[in-house]
Length: 395
Image (cartoon, rainbow, N blue to C red):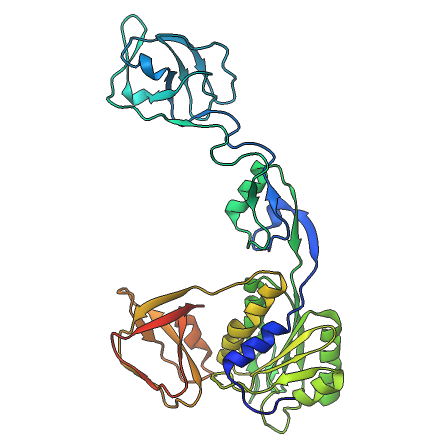
């Protein structure tokens, strides 16, 4: 085990190099939002499948726009034209309907005038074509969705349009969550003296779901080594990733690292030069990867976003990257210590300026609810000036 404190970049590299990928499964296309595509999807037809009217109007030959036109039929969407449009003729047509063969323009109803003799006259100036040509969006055989894409609602519409109703996606990694400590009680319980409700597991459960994983809560392990051992072993046997909160610092009851080694986990690092989250631990097992996150809720939240969330996505073949924005500082900022890489929760004001949230340390859970992003301060940097441009990572 590496007992020296390592940089965050080194920790990130080690985590990403420990990825093993999940398998695939076939699910209905309407259940795929938020999943990762594991196949290319091809179109089984041209789109549009025919020359289609983009407007309600009149289809005719452009050379006849200066003539009075006889209306030979009305073409509704879904109806096949019956008559061929000849010289000085037109067909009234609805949006989405098939444009009659040979017609090269559809002028809008708003640009038309109905004459007393029943004929139609174009009263505009230079008409737009208003015809979507067959295959101009997609040709039969084209790839419409590529493998490794994070599937969004608009992709479901595409799958429906090409008839791809059973879709191959990557399985969600199963993430076992274990909380440690005698001080923890369930959220539904009234805490006794020296007890607190277990907010970490609830927070991590939500983070796992947002990241695309499948969370399984293995409950609270008391500060009894044999119980902790059994709980961790059970989670490792049934999970792709195991997250343990608490028990990874230097207290008398922080025996999680020793338990991990007994269970067969090879610990690759146990300290990271970051604030918050220094005692973050990471190890590998033949069946799973394991994170030991600090018990403080802000620390566990931050380290999940920085290390666990990218791993979950990489396991599904998706190279997730958080959104980052460049904004100026709204105020001067000074931090107490600059020895570690600092991650500071921030909010954005109405002028798109960055304001560090009122943050009292890694146990200050409610600070995160007012945060829209985080900024990073390199080791040795302890202050930022008003107006200085910073990268804001969305959370």
